[in-house]
Image (tube, rainbow, N blue to C red; front, top):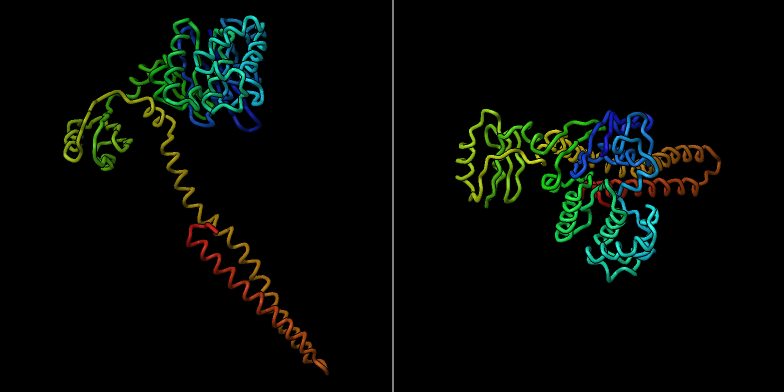
Length: 385
């Protein structure tokens, strides 16, 4: 269906997509994954010919994409692409017309999809009167209305509540059974694990792993323990032979060293927790994503840098007014004795001039002390004025 070969796209010195290849087959849900800034959206926009690649080839059923091909593709962007002051039905019909449909063809399909998404009664309301989730449903209808053979969804579950997420999941599986190819880009690894047949994970523009879900899991070992429990599981992170631990209030996933004995982990956990489930499993896609991309380590490092940098930034913000007031005080303190000496050298010294500069020195000194006190108070409160 869709074949992407050695795709590359750069922006000045930044390589957004670097030698990425993938093949999306009919009747499958294909997961295009990666952290923020990995190059997913650039790859999608290049496939859709929104932007031109520097090199690489993109084919649809073995042929170079043409204007007719675009009418066989449906696209749901991550960001909203609707006309907010337009009425919902009019918006859907407009997008259908862009795909070559007449109003007579599109209207009954639009009504059917509005009924499916429980929006029929809102057909003549304006888009901006809808909630974020309902706007997402309208945008989904716009991408489906022309019965495409290839669907590209960028974060389709964004803004949808759990009930509507289930509805969308059912629709995606229906489309899959109709032999439609679906490219599915998201950060929700649980949805990927449940829906996708194969995946391609890119990071920093490069493909770092690809294949079926089962192949990817097998390639990353099976020495993983999952458990549900009551109690404080924080100590699990410090157990011997635990390579990585994702611990939540009632759930944990531990990646063990190759030589680790899971029974010892079970004994340690059961002695301090009320276990509801303890299972040796293949690693979750979430765990593989974190391990391959290094997301958790990167986030922790970024958080530490942010915490360390905050006082420095606060110091810079508060020291500027302090330096300004100090400069004013030092200037007055230097000028005052000079003025005094010059005046006393006169036969009739101008005592008023001396008094004026004395007052200026006192006033600027007072402002400097106040500025220092304010800076100290800000530092004590974490930099908040």
